[in-house]
Length: 290
Length: 268
Image 1: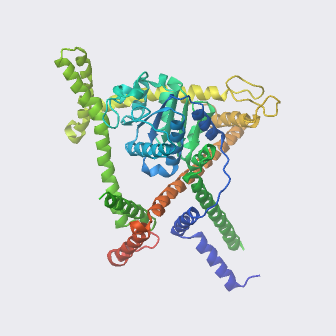
Image 2: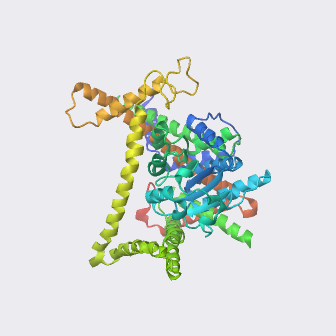
Image 3: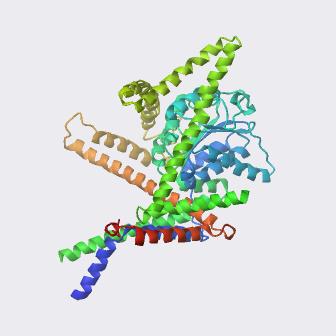
């Protein structure tokens, strides 16, 4: 049995906890992120069906297969989409696929170049050399959202008269012998929003029925489950978790795998705060009733 | 020189990141500087990209090539000039700048809306209607060509097959949610009960989406923390630690000397 002084102190504590300034929570989240980023630990990661499908779809490509990779994200979404972008590009180039990148987002062209620079550097160390315009190309940004997707489907050369370096697209060796989505072996979109994976399904995949996979942020992932179930897309990677699953599948744990430790720790904190907040509210109500 | 540019880039990245994070304390001039810089640079960069990669190659260069063909006596050059119409429509959009002529901008706008609606209609009809209806028509038992195996309890089923429970959830979910949103008939007791099941499905979907949003926001934080900690090298002058100190000092000075007493609401 608590005395009245003790009870009021207890009540004051609960009231203070319920009215906790949100900035303390921001600070805790920030600190946990920094601490867990510097702790070496490995939590189990089980690849989901949709991530496994992405891996198998790329793995089943024959050397020389034409892949259109639409990179539709900027530096703001680098944390989630960069690991997916690099992992897929690495696997594609190792398989000998011809990768043609383009973008519907203005801030994406530098990400395309950075992706090629990173992966080509790694492949060079393995003794694999790739040539711009022959094995890969960057067609750059194109305005027009859905209209641009429909136009790409009809003709790559007309939609992109030049590549990002200003070279005529029709003269690039990689572009010889094909020009539209009927000739493409795989469509990949790594996207953060609209236009992105959903728009590519609606304007390209549902029209030309070519195989399609996607890498998206966790916000977009729930929108893709119906398209996965209807087989419009063969598989997709959802956010950092998807990237970590993919890193496990390709056997090269990287930043996404490490990031999942932080994700888990922050989630535990959020769940704990929600639980403690609810318990405090319940106790306060009980005190008020008594 | 290259090292100096790199150093400047790293410091700028770290300081602007921390300046944006300072909003978590409250709206402040440091955050405002970063915000205005971002909006200005984004607007300029977007215009540059649109001009360089779309307007110039798809309009200007295309018409110049056409004009050259006309000069060379090739009639195909005339066909290439039809994009001049796009240029005219684009210029008509600028009539919004003159209030008495702003109504003219409705013509190109009508074309954009019409084309957008037409394209979306086809895309939605195929991907969101026909394909989804077809994907919902699944057998609850046995196998169907083109559809994942059905009952994992059956001896012929493979480990990757989807289960009958998944299919039941799908069928019950679709029917109950559609019933909840069916307003053409007054809902009697049985229909209302089915609708309640439907609203549970909708709520669970919202919950999953909300969970994904939290996941995405934490990922953004992780990305920024990577950048801050990676940059915090002795050779760079510890930009994260030094930058954080500078931003905190700026906020303290602003709070003590520049902020009006009436605005010093600690929870602002």
